[in-house]
Image 1 (tube, rainbow, N blue to C red):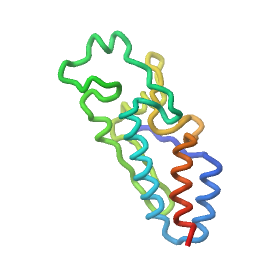
Image 2: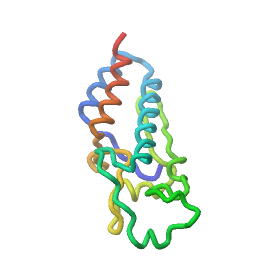
Image 3: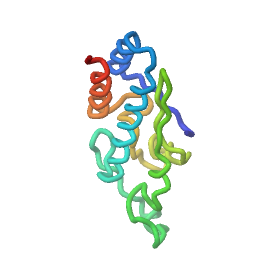
Image 4: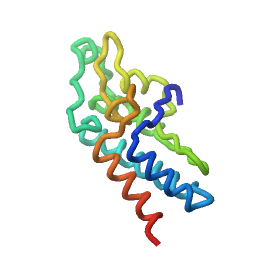
Length: 147
């Protein structure tokens, strides 16, 4: 994955640390979180909204003018390559989720010439999840905390 966003969400990190004190191998928890985040991100391609529920900016006129006739005709979904590269990797202490396509970072962070079309976090610079993503992650962790 070309770009990296470190999760700094204090509430999620606090609960994760509580769970780490109780479970030796966190790989199943991290894998569940990765699967859930993949589902959340995939849904954003359907709704064409960022993690906070804000619609992705429409194409620029220059993009419209050069869009291939055989494309899918949807923002961030020309041929489905970026979405099909979505994945996650989990181990005993972390999970990384994102896209294998390096250009995904331009959409997540924006550029001088392109607006941000967030897919992964509410704030990539701050490492903050959206409230719905945070709730989903906390729900997964709670399932492992509850005997």
